[in-house]
Figure 1 (cartoon, rainbow, N blue to C red):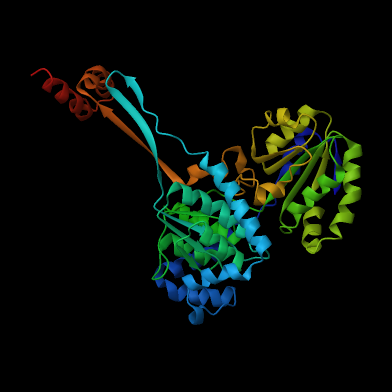
Figure 2: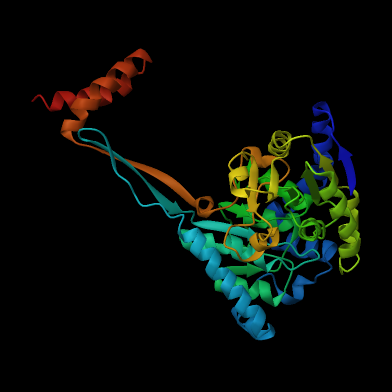
Amino acid sequence: MQIIPFPDRAEWPRLLARPMQSSAQIESIVAPILAQVRTRGDAALIELANRFDNIDLSATGLHVPQDELDAAEAQLSTELKAAIRQAYSNIRLFHEAQKQPVQKVETMPGVTCWRRSVGIDKVGIYIPGGTAPLFSTVLMLGVPAQLAGCREVVLCSPSNHPAIYFAAKLVGVTKVFRIGGAQAIAAMAYGTESIPQVYKIFGPGNQYVTSAKMLVAKEGTAIDMPAGPSEVAVYADDTAVPAFVAADLLSQAEHGADSQVLLVSTSKKLLSSVNLVLSTQMNKLPRRDLAAKAIDNSKAILVDTHADAIELLNQYAAEHLILSVENAEAVAEQITNAGSIFLGNYTPESAGDYASGTNHTLPTNGFARAYSGVSLDSFVKKITVQHITPEGIKNVGPVVEAMAEAESLDAHKRAVSIRLASLLD
């Protein structure tokens, strides 16, 4: 890794910038795909799958039948099935605790307001094919959808990996389709003869999938969040174990060449030690070529003080932030911008990716400054309810009348006045 010692603050924005791609160029490729699916439905999906993924869906069909989903379990080892079930249990336990009881609030005598959570009726989950079968993401998105009570959960993926099908069955996915790319996003956004239209789309993907999600969001289909390549920042001091830090950096780097890796420290000794073990560990990885490209583009920044490190990390707003420092929990309280935080020497980011219980669908590309990661709330709508008694309208009515009159909205005022007058009869 390139070590950058004590950069001037004016240089921070440049050092922390993510690689930018031309959104206009990507949209020019994606928009015609969306249009084809919108106008030609299943026929377009079959044609596009053949063109981009070399899959002949005219033979297999778009829909994965139930017997194929059922057969997936027998294709997995007992050890992997046990691991997936344990991860499911942990994720469910953490997300179940996010349920909020209805709390009725009497704002004035006779005026009662409350809010209730209602699951989004129809949601779509996208699981990319790519170089890794992301069955863990099926759990991360399927579990909160299941807990929220979403009535229809559609999953699209070009991968037919049995672990994806096993996880889909575990979380109660209602329909699975073997389609990927921007065309899968279009199918869920618009609906086709086979694939139901959904109200909100979740899941990661490459630049074309991300662009498709952003475009359909402009047209009214909700999405989980804007997303880009996965990223990790590690803040480490002399209490950190260099081998652990290197392993965390590589666990992120192996996602792909466009993954973002950042190491920050006040200790030159720590940075040098991490660099020494980094290459040794990388050479042992099956995906070392991908990891090497990401590491080549990564940075290790040496700063003067702890305060500088905190300010720099809050500017970066990492998707994953590992704090391998003394008093890590206290340090975490100073972090205002991060998707998910991992504390201490024994909390690898990969634990959150798979099985600790938190959700791994997180804001990237600096969006952690304003966005949260996926949670149970992502799959529900909050509907407010209010009930006003005759006593209540007497109390709140004059307030409404005065405000409506000041805004010159006479019909608003009259809707209250006619009720108050009726109570005088």
